Length: 407
Image (cartoon, rainbow, N blue to C red; front, side, top):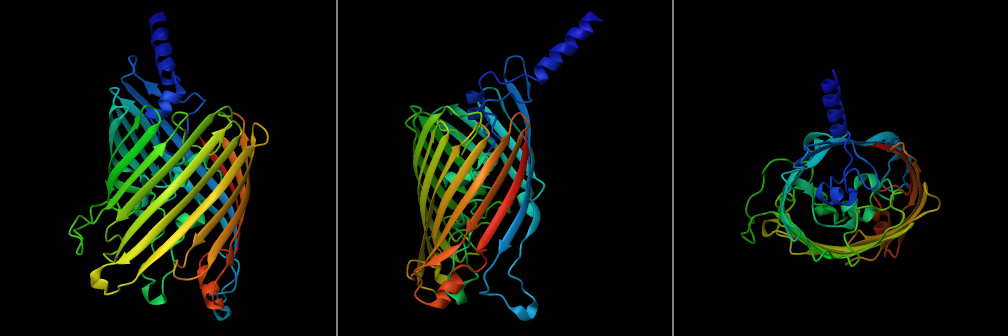
């Protein structure tokens, strides 16, 4: 009987084994969804540490209100200024992550709130030969933009900057091709590493078809005669050591970390073999105790292929600055100012989108409550038509309250 009790106790201790070093665990098993920083995780591990298995879950439920101006609405069809309003589940992610044999890190997650190929949010394996060199293959975040690369459950606002997610505006005859600046999740292979604990690099090849496609659909470029893929790279300087992928965590109120980065990518014949999209970005992020600061600027050039017989190319700019501060150990205030030249540099006019938010972390419960308000303004347009077209599809007033649970 005593032997059975000993076996059961050993099994229980292993199944609830906390990670010996949360910082090392986070570096080895980054899942992009839930951070384990400063808390014990529910995990299984072999006695010698060769294998670690960690399940995780994140569920977000939001209440949304969006008010659109009258441009583009037709009252004859009973189109209302209030639309896309009500309740939503942005993410319902169930996954597991871990490591094996000291060199392999793996991660798989399903987003039940998505559909089609986007149901598979991530699926990758990473082989780290040494800190300076590792190879990752599968479906994961492309190396572009601090906003996208932040852990999903630790973003400052419930939604990403509009300048990354909104489709660009082109002349009406070309509006079938409307990429956005952000690239997000994709399938591919990447080499990455940290040199001297300060210099980070990522370089990879991806399909360029985004998160909703899990099959090989690409061909060769008709114009450049190279594989029609997304070629992407990112280089960072982190002078105070590896910066965690967070925009505010109540368990990390004594950090002093900084990140400065540049990135670039080329999506060759990226959308229905019609355009070649070049992107470049600069990013800055700093966490100093209760304060979080970040700023990004990015550029995209869209060029049409020869078969389109369109000789024009279009250039777009976007960027944001944002700040968060923990007023108390559980309450974080947030500000963001988002800018986008959505209609191209050849035309006047910018979108300016200030946002204000507040986050409350329920101590020891895995709950996070977020609220934000965003206003979409327009300035500098040459004509009223340009002004009216520039914010089509974007709410003038947008409010979101989001409750998140994670473990």
